[in-house]
Image (cartoon, rainbow, N blue to C red; front, side):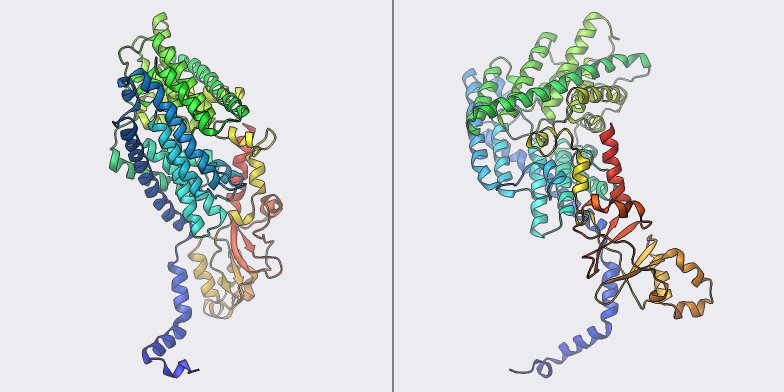
Length: 605
């Protein structure tokens, strides 16, 4: 075998020599310019936002294409249904249910045993991994359902597909569970933001509903993803608000009591809506019919109701807009009948197993209920005649959303963003607060946690607190601070403390084993000495303390609590194991305790 050294080109030998001479400096530059994990997450969130915005566009184009094939025209399904003959109103949702059910039937083969496709489940009790092929077929099923008039919305499928794509990308790079969970939340929030042109609502949805935490290192990426997704969506669909509501200035306290009463009604309606969906799903489950037969039956119900009320087709957007605009013909009796019809069709569609969102149908139910309530008050002369019916309709939308999600903050922000009407914030806030309290009292779980309770992931005695305590340190840990070597001089140590906000710096040997930590407060006595001597003579080995209590990535948060509660370090070292003691990360003490505190506070309320 030939010796490669002497026969190498001169330029290659020169490069190797220069690299050996400057290796330490190059490594220092790489560490200096290497982005922090928070910065990296913001970059990832931006990419997820772009992907979610494009997903929303492609989902819309795909749905319109299916409408063009089966209905021979694109556009709002309510307007299409009104122009169809009665036999087609009955037949199209039925055949659409068969097609959507077949897509679900074949898609279940790709799910795999033990794998969940529920976003909240893979974040709360899983590792952030969503099955790609199964969810892709679920998206196709959702598009077929929506295009054929099923009483569901598209926002749920857009959020689900965005979260699935984000999770799949992270799985390709074999990223740890904590990052996959964050990507799933970013995808879901960005999907909602793109679908509704509501960046604040998307971020709050992901933080409060999906992650259950507003910790800044999590909330910042959610904001970034939602903003980018909304901007991408605006590029294609513009900036018009979803619903137009007349401006009405609330200047007197006596204008608000009726919205308190409306909150009671929407709370009861929201809880009843959840119980009806739960009962319908159990009823379909007892039949043991294939999913395509169940969806066909649901489509048949929607088609039969559409013979009298074609407005039950689709997510209810067109009917909601007509209610808020005071469309001619939307009398008290008609809106009351439409309220019952749409509520029943949505319950049957979701209970049969259709894939889609219930956000927009819930908004319709609230708008109809608010409109009926306002028309009754106007007819009896119990309310100022200058208060528009649409104001009560919008408040009803917020109240019904709060009652089903158990999140008044999310409901207020979402309805405010989709209407762009700040003047109605006071009644919205009051209605949402009352509706949430009533909804929680009558139905303990929300529209998102109820499926987890039925699957046994959440029980009456277990909450997100238990799941959080079962998480492992490795799921929450961050990259460690750049450690010091044991021979680092006092000047190097001082410079490092000036460039970071840490109160401790880890000290490692050449193999990365943790030898101890240097505390910022311990430097004072040395810096007060003769500066010229101290900066050169003292090294990290002279200054460091013994290693503090450390954590390992396999430890559960429950077992790590004693260290979290007693440590005075903001970043607790995480080592690979207690034998080799190699530093591999840190656990942010405030973040971990803050997460548990938020969950405990939520549990008490």
